[in-house]
Amino acid sequence: MSMRRSAYWLFAFISSAIIVPLFVLLYRRTHWNPYWIWILAFSTASFVVYGLDKGLAIAQGPRAPEILLHALALLGGFPGAWLGMLLFRHKVNLGKHPGIWLVLVLSTLGHAALAYVWFLRGR
Image (cartoon, rainbow, N blue to C red; front, side, top):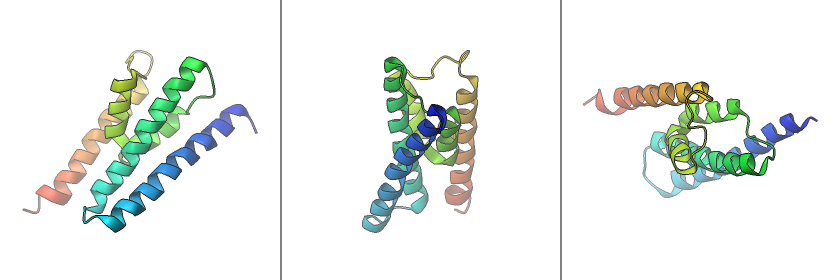
């Protein structure tokens, strides 16, 4: 298995190891809306992956695939991705990483629209 492919599986495993237990724990122990728990779980994973990827970029180690960063943001991890970008100063150069910015803006707008339809429109 190539280094690139094994890095993809490693980061996918790390993300899953954060998302699934956190979601289950919060779902069972709180009365929060499952959508907000979903957003929190994916955001936590996104934040951790951005931090790991920044550290590995400095150490010149295996990197998190951008498709995984995109998938985490689109599935609800956009707040953690934004926070990771700002705190770790990672993927902030719009000229070098236009795809990340586009996916983050679109996922933020998409989830804002979902939240509006699900929670505010019915009032």
